[in-house]
Image: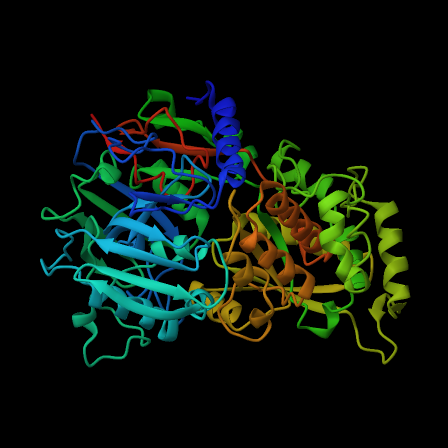
Amino acid sequence: MTILGDFGRRVLCVIGLALSGLLLGTGTHAAPAHGIAMYGQPALPPDFVSLPYANPDAPQGGEIVFGEAGGFDSLNPFILKGRAPAGLSALTVETLMGRSYAEPFTLYGLLAESVLAGAQREWVEFTLRPNARFADGAPVTIEDVIWSFETLGTQGHPRYLGSWKKVANTQQTGPRSVRFTFNEIDRELPLILGLRPILQKAQWAGRAFDVSSLEAPIGSGPYIVDRFEPGRSITYRKNPNWWGQDLAFNRGRHNFETIRYDYFGDASVIFEAFKSGALSSYRESSVAKWARNYDFPAIASGAILKSEVPHQRPSGINGLAFNTRRPLFFDWRVREALILAFNFEFINNTLNAGALPRIRSYFSNSALAMGQGPATGRVAAALAPFADSLLPDTFEGYVLPKSDGSEANRTNTRRAAALLREAGWQVTDGQLRDVSGRPFTFEVLLAQGADEAQSIVTIYAEALKRLGITVRVSTVDAAQYVERTNTYDFDMTPYVRALSLSPGNEQMLYWGHEGVTQPGSRNWMGIDSPAAEAMIARMLSADDQQDFIAAARALDRILTAGRYVIPFWYSDVSRLAHKRVLKFPGNLPIYGDWIGFQPDVWWYEE
């Protein structure tokens, strides 16, 4: 089953309306409002019935079962230590506001009944709903909100730290309202704080928050942890007393009675479990496998359906990340040589029958992409102050090398060898060595179950032998992989970052200077670029449509020309195989199969 229709036209219309809001003002509310948009005003009125991509009449009940690779050893998803199971935060804990994925970045009241922001968004005030309750029946209070923000910002995962540092003052302004005042102008901060998890202060009395444990947080969300076996399986059950069942924002969402995640050693076992009927849905990342491997009996009988879900979000980045903290990869010429040696056309033909396009930049497939050719206008002006520090091809427009598709890749291999010689490397007795005689050898770190990455790296390692480079491939379990990537203990590893239509504060977590040394950031590559940080700051302070887009495109140029990742491919559709009894609305969000889609708006129907 393929989902088609007027999706593309609807996407362009929604994005255009949202971006045009930049020209209509700051989005400031003269009075508390039911929602807040990054630019302009929310698309839905205060009396909306449901989110436009949810089915308010969806049946309730049934079960959906997913498969995950690896395991888990903690039930606290809000700290750096340990690995929490899938779904825990999203299903059991709520935020002050919830995101609509039918708009680039708009929030509507969830725990909060209203939001009010200052003229320049220098502060934001939330008012709680009087009936908001935790799973144990205790009311959600302003004290819980303030404690959650402070605790996450000081003891939680590093992803919460950056925004909390921008909060200058917290003030309770009424029995159910709280105001956060900021120490810098950042238009996104009110929305970021609206998406902070709200936890129950009383549960953590006398306990260390930042210590991993197998006690689940008490949340206010639609589900509670029903049962679990550490590292093997976890089941969430719909809370029959969930306070938010009848909110317009929640109508047609969270329809299953139970949601279960089973854990397996690797991805191939997950697929076999799906074929046997043990799992309800399987997300296929390989277009070749999508065409080749779905001929088993349940497909033929119609018990399992194949659905393609389109989207209009940026490609993001998916590839092999260089850890530039390692001296071996600090020189951009070395990174460029290794990108040249990566024979994308041959690998894509081998694994995908050549069907998937290459990721050309971090925001490709969207209006935020850097575009072809030299930088002009506002993009060039934004980059100009940093001209002396930018890598070659930032202004000109970096273009990934293309091969003739043959396995030999001779032209690009010769170019790679020349760059390596220029960087001080010479082949001696078949081994590439530096001036002191040290061989060019490095490790590629993989997680168990990363079958596609393993196939890619196997082909790539053979190609690097032609340059005299030796590659060691290390496959570790999920816990080791998380520990090593959190502490940047790797040379090269697969790296995936999905990017939205409204990039903002999270970009600093991905590419900011603090991540060079601070454990647990998303800056696995060790990017240390004042120019990139300046573009992010410009995006956050932009109140003009063209300036925002220009800053995003300039950031895209800096990251792409940085040669920090060897990009793979992307798809503008998601491929989901699922049991026939699982349904989803035909009115898709612009983000497609992304956060908030499965299982949020799916339902079970015989």
